[in-house]
Image (tube, rainbow, N blue to C red; front, side, top):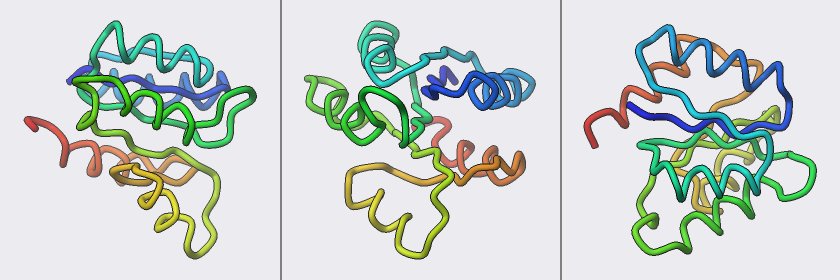
Length: 120
C-alpha cells in the first residue's frame, strides 16, 4: 500500500515512515500541509497519515483541500495528533478524517488501524 505521511516534525515523520517501510508499505513524505496536498494529488496514495498541528496550513485545512479535488473525495485520511483530550477524536471525525492515531505512536495500534484500509 502507498502511504503518504504529512508531518512538519522531521523526527515524527521519519519514525512513522520507517515503521511503515519495515511493514512493507511504500512511503511518501511531506513536511507541511501544502506539500502534502501537492504529493497527494500527484502521487495518488492509498492512504494519508496527516498531522493536525503544523506550521502554515494545518492538517484539517489540508484534508479539506485534498477532499475537494475530483477523484480524491474518498481517499482515506487518518489524523495524527498529540491531542488526546476527550472529544478530540470525535471532533476530528466530524472534520472529515476517517480515523485518528494519537502520538506518541503505538506501533501495533497504528499498524492495526492501517490494516483496516488495505485492499479498499
